Length: 220
Ligand code: GTP
Ligand code: MG
Image 1 (cartoon, protein in one colour):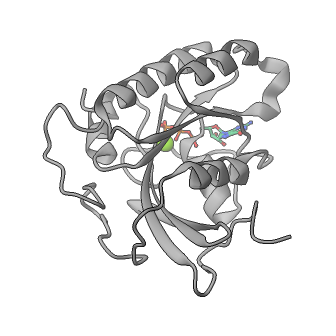
Image 2: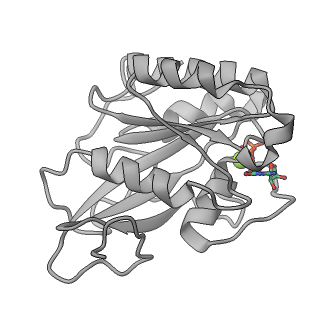
């Protein structure tokens, strides 16, 4: 099979154009945001992941990973945000300039779904108009403790143009598939040099400079 459906850590196809996108993770505390990223980027899962204050727990502000499509290599620059109430004010800074977001909830926690809906709506109001938003119902391995009914989520996702995936960072269910689906949906007009315009340590736009006003990405 060609490259479709595979992720290629740091090994873009020779000759492919490379498109770089800033992706931000949002959602309540303990839903599994960095766990999803560590599964996608490093193939790892930690039962006792430390809570995020800003950036990844290994001190990286962001992690990168590539997804190879037929003629394009999509390079994701992935920023995590802290779900804890006292750190939420930092989220808009991380969201600035993001072309895509994954809003995560925990399928065993109804409140986390309510919070995810708030984040998705906030992004749609404030973020870049063509932002691609995925909704991840994470911890799908805990199906016997499920508190949020998928029958309720799918219509919500459809009505709000969100890519909905049931994921498990623990078993890796649908993790690569979610990033692949996002990669396919993102507009890929301008080839970008991987690493160029890196937002390391700044949390700023990769494409155009964006003023830190309330009308920009997920200000709250
Ligand atoms: P904050 O940093 O507080 O915002 O939380 P978070 O969203 O970053 O969650 P984190 O990735 O730290 O995960 C919280 C806990 O859930 C950790 O103990 C993880 O091991 C666990 N966890 C994450 N994903 C899954 C999953 O898919 N299934 C199960 N069973 N546990 C998971
Ligand atoms: Mg975290």
